[in-house]
Length: 201
Image 1 (tube, rainbow, N blue to C red):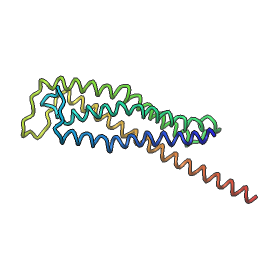
Image 2 (cartoon, one colour; image 1 turned 90 degrees about the vertical axis):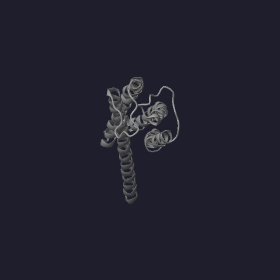
Image 3 (cartoon, helix red, strand yellow; image 1 turned 180 degrees about the vertical axis):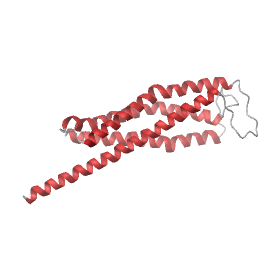
């Protein structure tokens, strides 16, 4: 019973976490920023030196990310149960389970870093950027390069780091899914072989 629950928990957690990240990155983010940059959506307190569409899109998408942290926590807990049951109940511990647990640890470390430190830093730097933008001149209409200043460079660096870590999470989860599927196929083939050997005897 516990093994079946662990199996269900692993795949539910993996599908919830992986599907959520892919949906946010491939659907939600492009959709939000497309709408905010191609329509006349405005926000109070945004200086002319900043891109209004990106600022509005960032405000909306930031709230989406804040809410998605709960999905990440739930997905991580489900994955832990799915990995933990075979980890403590099977001796010796299978190599595939050890690798899955290591990947889970890496995923949780990234989650703690992004949710506990990096994202708050991005939100804080966004406010600092908006405040500093009030003293920056608006770019000329025919400007080919965006206006940059230290606060904007720092914000862009933090934002790029957050995007990179989100991609790493996707790759880790994809690795867990592939390894979990291979482990399931291997276990199924072992059961079939044992059944055939038992029938032959």
